[in-house]
Length: 259
Image: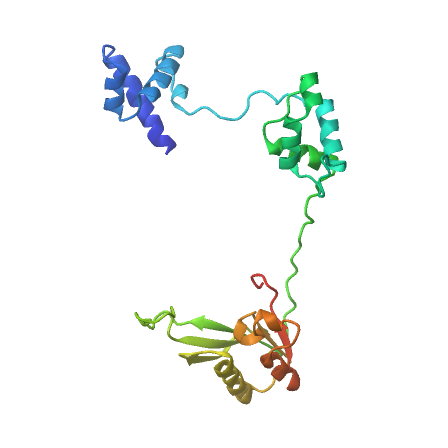
């Protein structure tokens, strides 16, 4: 995009030097840009050498001067509002609430102290003073590989190659229940069904266990077909109770994308 802008500015400078009698709307139509664009860049071209190529590049929008230092009275007032909320506020005020109080503070207005215009300034002050702490850095540790057939991971997968029913409500007509060995990442089984619910999913697990035996751990996500509804969160689902009766430890993934 920057290359296109440079070419457009170079064409504008060339046409302006070649046809000095052209008006700004004519130059804008020739370069396919706005009149304000022509006004701005013609002014820059007049201030530099005609052979200077650096003028064609965009100027940095970064601040060239450091921001003004904050008034200590303003910082002290932010601390007071944070530690002792006014108007009997029954919570710890955040940057947005503190900024609204600063704009209505009569003492600061009488002293000529101008409050900041952005909540980011208040947030920086609170963070620098230790009122807002940075979240702790999370370090992810890789899981230790287990022995083959000691842990089996299972999950449902939609078969997108099977067309869905145009008059139906389901997006996919066929699903497979995959069983993967966590120790070797080998796909052990993939059972297909056109209607996987709690009963048919349990039958598929029983079929897998009859073929490969009982693993020590079975890992699965929080699919309602495995863990049941949210109303029964205090009691194990039938599927988990079934695994516990067989001596298999059910390992339910946390409510986040699994590792």
